[in-house]
Image (cartoon, rainbow, N blue to C red; front, side, top):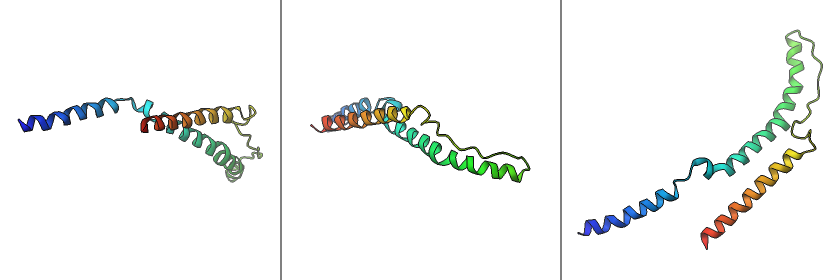
Length: 107
């Protein structure tokens, strides 16, 4: 009888845990995915592609192809930085709402 009594709370506890962790992974991790995506876009747009645009003419000259240097123009700044404003709004609201969720969970 004691085996049944001791196992029943564990089963109900496991059911509660499994229902809590039953969310789809995208629903649970969309905020970090958005932050990581924005970070990658910024790294490529402001660091990697400008370096590639400087190195490409040198590499083409070694291959015997004459190619002039073309200054890199940021893709995300072509619309007046609207992309960064929009991503900042999305990430800011996401961080604020996540903070509110954590506060509500503790109280």
